Length: 79
Image: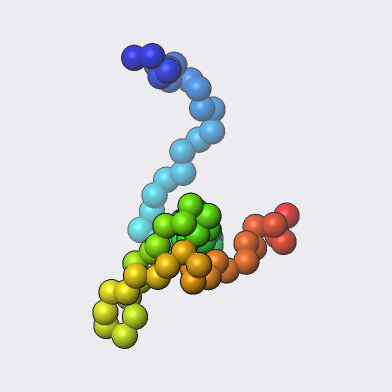
């Protein structure tokens, strides 16, 4: 296959073991990464002029791109 390497030694980083309490232990970091992904998706939809679907008052509503509110990006402030 073109573009794919079969070299198994590409990554020297040890894999983290997934334990029963992994998600509880890393809940804050997981939540932050998830929120960043949502913000990136909102930003992309707004920039490309695509509406989004959201759940409001028990109904699905379509939000036009000009009404999409993207929270500020905290990644820039933390670094």
